[in-house]
Length: 550
Image 1 (cartoon, helix red, strand yellow):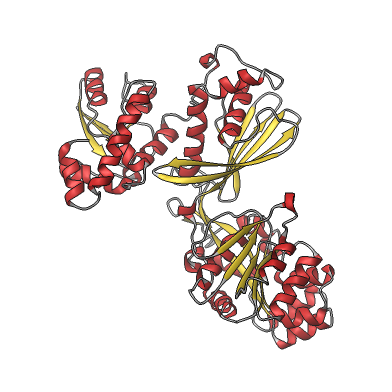
Image 2 (image 1 turned 180 degrees about the vertical axis):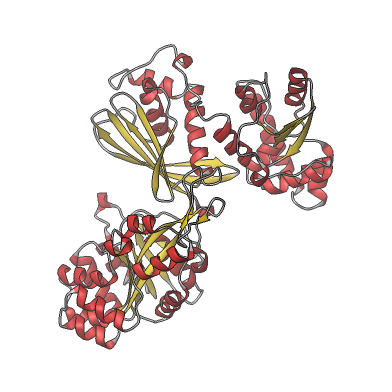
């Protein structure tokens, strides 16, 4: 990075002198330790250390060097051939062709000071080559999509030997530390974060190693490495997570922290033995993607007003229900964010803690020392709390302590696994909670689901007024991009309280709530279908109600 760029960053106060010196020291260290002998670009180090954003760095390049500033919206949807230049050269050089017309080629680059790719391509093609600048993460994603689609980064010749699941442990450690394995695992984790995946699934099969990403709630298979390297790849992840690579008969849990695009990302790692080796799942916990604004989450206005009103009550129970992956934890975190004031003492018990919230006392379940939800709740009552959040009400003891806590002037937030809001009442009664106590303490129950949104880039209206999205580069040809919420909020009115005391069945409670103005998830979902936000098929997939398809 040139002295002029450094001066611009300092003068514009994008970067402090101390931060610049820190990055230079890190660059010197990386140069001294690099196996390839290549010194890492100072700009990349500034981003990796979190001292400068990609956007600010690229903007400074464009301003000082008078280069065009690009982003993913300016990138081509298809591969632009530069014969005889190979795809491997483009990806290894980290340059993305964006134009090849007449005698001119334009490349999007993240490091405009590296002239070698420009000179090499000019020599190979006989054309003039010009640089534009773009964020490195967006260039990497485009290269992955267009030029590295079939390249896993591993080939059968990458290792002198391979081993099976019964191989020598020391040799397994050596293979897990080989550069090709490290590159593959790091690139997989970077790809998952860039595509905003929630989980990475690594599944050994009899004849192959299957790798899938969970994107917007759906699993999507990505290119897998050769089957012979499955042990080395799984061992690499276990080493990163601090797990015992020699133990392959029992499940293990661990955690990885990795710098991705200049930010520290946490990965929660879970392994479990299967017939053909260990299955590994990495849950991606990206604190920077945690959205705590109810409006941004897609909360309908009427339901959001009811929810916020319930949060202002000094005591009682607020329940969020739905299946795994329906966004319950995020909703509770958003609620805690609203309640997180200097006047409130907030305690949580979670299994596990997914995100750290400033100003809130968070405790994690630890079964090894018998610290469960119920034990933690009992302890919390001696901590002078105002608000307590319980990750999930799983049993009678936890439910009863939550009810008792709310009766003594505390606000309790928790989750329950039921399909509907009314179903939560029946579930708690089945657990053994007294009907009159439940009627007195329950404020609201909110059931929720997440539905995928049709991709705005390829969405089109059908003749009948419905909408569809065939798929494009922007949505990775899935037809969907992002998700939004559908909810139903059961307010515990006096009439509902009477039904609870009478132990009325869930359908009767739901019918009464609808007569009092509750909008069901089906109603909300159908409204989104008519607006073109989602499709009828997606709504049916999430809710599974035949009424959706009628």
